[in-house]
Amino acid sequence: MIIIKSAREIALLKEAGRIVGLCHEEIKKHIKPGITTWEINEICEKFILAHDAYPSFKGYGGFPCAVCTSVNEVVIHGIPSKKQKLKNGDIIAIDIGACYKGYHGDSAWSYTVGSVNSKDQKLMDVTREALFKGLAEVKPGAHLGDVEAAIGDYISSFGYGIVEEYTGHGVGHELHEEPAIFNFGERNTGPILKEGMVLAIEPMVNAGTKKVRTLSDGWTVVTNDKSKSAHFEHTIVVTKDGYEILTTV
Image (cartoon, rainbow, N blue to C red; front, side, top):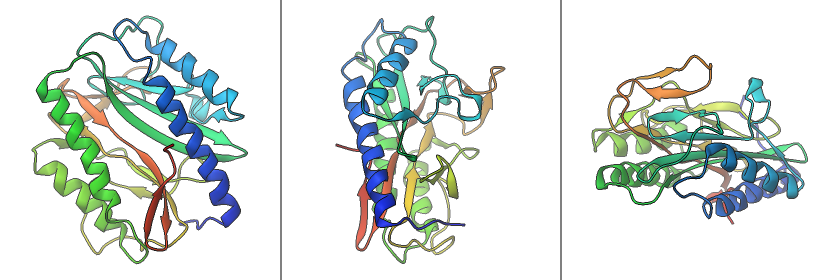
């Protein structure tokens, strides 16, 4: 079932999203060679708690940390570690969720560590642009498949692998709600978007194969061929004439 949010719920979701956006603004100041992914986790958790919210991911399904830190070939769900130090040339996707008064904001963003090569920069640029290609299709009366097709068609034109096993989703009182939002699809198919729907749209793109696997920790998802991966996500609300990004400042 697709849940339409009330005006009160939208206001709470906006504040949850604002906190997530602010946290991204804060953490990107700290991303540099030598910082550990555990330190990134600590900074984000303290920031979220200081803004009267709680890290949505901590304890969710047993996940042990406040944020996901996915480096290079890690697609999603990377677990922060005191042993993992970022190096010049790495790319890292930091997925941040904040729960404010029972409502969630959710946004992932990929960042460069120091200077990266042109191949990795292009992967990130295409993945980010794919997000906005999808968002451009969001309006009342559009099909969800229009959003999915716009994302998938753009990514495919560059020959990258589109992760199929993981999707975007609805957001609200629960971190993950219906509908699932794939990063590929067909126009004029799927649910019809309506004003007030809140959605997390999140392209996950691999430089090589689309195939992924989960490591023995039960969380960390990596590319099968060890190619790098990028991930960009915003939570948005469908408005009367388009959309509004909630996870920004």
